Amino acid sequence: MSPTRTPTAVRPLPEEWGRVPTTVVMPTYNEADNLPTMAETLMALPLEGLRLLVVDDGSPDGTGTIAEQLADKYNEPGRARMGVLHRTAKNGLGRAYAAGMARALDEGAAYVLQMDADGSHPADKIAEMLGVALATGADVVVGSRYVPGGTLSDAWGAHRKLLSRWANAYASSILGTRVRDITGGFNLWSAEALRAIDLDSVDSAGYSFQVEMKYRALKAGFTVMEVPIHFEDRTAGESKMNLAVQLESVAMPWRLRSRALGGPAGKRRTR
Image (cartoon, rainbow, N blue to C red):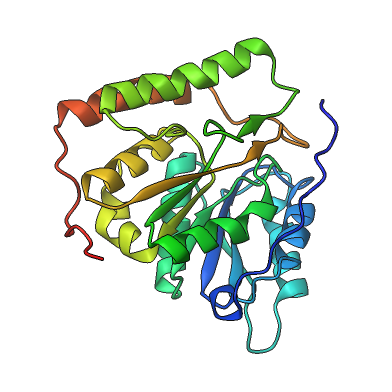
């Protein structure tokens, strides 16, 4: 495993930007070893409006219980900084994200950030991503491994790096997009974009959720921007990628293209 990356200093946002209601949606399944560190890192960020929502799929290792304990620790009178959504069925990462995003919108989030619980996504980039969205009006900000400045963990071998780049090129080519990290899972969404996409109508259950969501946002006329990140290998636990998930990821771009999807209901934003 590569050495742990030293987090960069988080540049504070303007005070009013830091108060914008922003919910990090973090699906978990058997992430008991990772979640306490992730929660501590997020709660320490200089973002008054930041909230963490853990979506646990009935983890047998007790992740859901740990999440509840962490929520008790970090929540303050009159300020709920962390919540937990318990799901009884483990039916895919995409379904977990959709459920968490819907809950975040119901609870008043202006922006929703997707983030893995395994330590692979850099929390010190969240303020920058939110700042880019607020400064430019971008509807989706992708934490990208494949724009200039983006990097991958040294723990990834040549084969894994090649496969990841091929998957991005494969999906982008089929769907005709210019998003360089269309498969990436570290994404900030405006509430307006998520409502227009209609989370209940998203088909993908697994990792192809990332591709379908970005494609539908683009088709609906929303603006997608990418900022470079360093993607680290998971710190503990095992990857949830399996054959069924891989097959869905291969098939989904063709399914989206074959439908000639005109985009979810919603008008192109005017600026």
